[in-house]
Image (cartoon, rainbow, N blue to C red; front, side, top):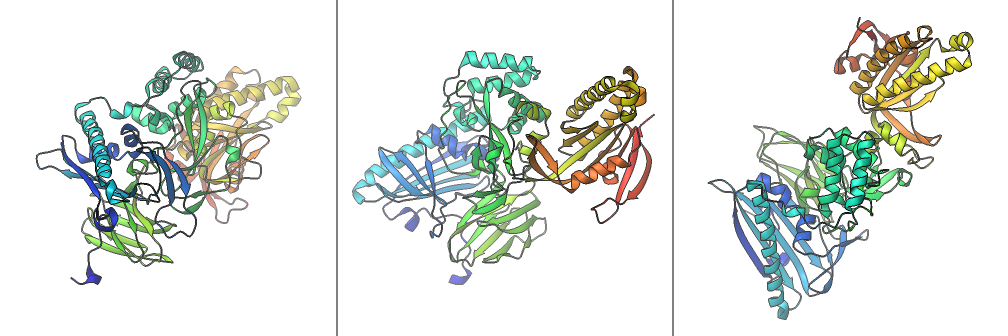
Length: 617
């Protein structure tokens, strides 16, 4: 095989230039009872493992623009009594199989640090885990010290891996339950009682309180409600509402994380929405991105400092556990070819190269075992590839600078409670009415369902019943609609005269809310003195939108809002007008069809197929 035909590398070397000729190497092999798939997300959680083996916290400094290095950060920390400064390129891994870290020291007693973990399936069941660390000292005389340090670190890592195996296979306590800072028990008890009094489900309140009492520090520095709801097997909206109400209860504080659309990690945390700008930047992926409220801004929580004084420290810059949707990642030197392992599951993936170059990848039975992508200044070619499950995608770099490439799973279900989701909850608007966007900063939402209602007969009612009685009916009907809208997981954005505008995360919830509102209003009409003089009509539409701050609150504007309003005007009393495609996807929800038609709406080029609905008799 010629030099030009040499197979692309699948892993970084641990000897030679990477580890240094006089590297001190420590290695251990462990036979574990658990499967590699079960072990992987835990043994590659580098932030937690570094805490357990006694590493010091790290501070990150972005690498200056134009430096010819694959590292995106310069890391500052301490080890063995020395101040350390090193470049750390993106970690490399193939999901469930291999993971490696390479550090190039800028000074101090060592030149480099190379750690590698390999997981192999054992014939009789379980996993063989091999841990290897090579530390290259800057001076030969320091090699015994480097050997002692490498041996000590590997021994501690092995202890963590064994403890993880015992936890996974035999339900032993998780080693990641420590370290934990001391809780303020009295404050937590008062907060939990306040949550129950405020209507939070008792199980949700108890879970939040227990997490604040016993959770490891690593679990509390960035609490994600939907992730916790999945672990607790509870309704995600109930858990999110519980966390929102935990803020005034004095248990937690709300933070907004700006999330990179590629690595899905937080590039910045802010305390208020008004600190969010129109654009974010991820230093690791080297991309700028528009801050969509339903994709790039996430609500997270931290303990109130009077509840738990959790150190806001980072112990690692990255790793597979932080990006579980990334199946494989590799660094490419200029002109180098590297291979990304494809998972065994068929499905849709994509290849991302730092800077935003993309190619779609489909894993399909019967496709080639290996495909090649050419990386140039204009991007990746071809733009689409099809490869066999468990095959390989080779990325061949034609760039003059080092980059990293990764294979991302597109079907990954995000556990982010995005700002759009939070903003569609009535609890958020009541509890955080002052947490609004900076004036003049409209942020995009890719999909929101908007509902408009109108109270018919109200104008005549003011003449017939008088201002006081009519105003009371209008105000009472707002309460009726608000209750049904929030029960369907939506929020009232604003009231206008005798009309309501509400927002929902999805079309089905919006249609369900409209049906609930009609049914509840019919009951209201029967009970109210002047109810028979009025009626209710509704219209809804869904699509992209912009969110702005208006009159001291979050508001929506754009074509989607305009169309929803115009569809409401097409309804008769006791009717809903909705797009036909919404009805087809969501079902009738206790409604029956009055008629179907196509309508022309001002500002929309093509006619819209709509359905008029009423309550089923």
